[in-house]
Length: 92
Image (cartoon, rainbow, N blue to C red; front, top):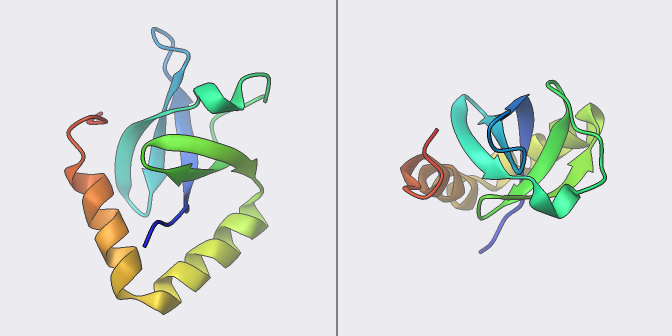
């Protein structure tokens, strides 16, 4: 199962403007924000992440709703978080 997981932007990396440090339930990773070119992103904004890429900007209410749903489905969500935490390509 492939999931999009909400994450909160902590910072846009100044030396790599195509990357942002994002917090996903306490797991902090650099993710690619290149697909959101033209979208204004700042610390505190929420994005929907899939395989290390921000797919869309979402509001905090949407993020909370998605996190509630993901927590409700259990194992698939836990596996997706584990994969994010173990990701070698996006260590931050």
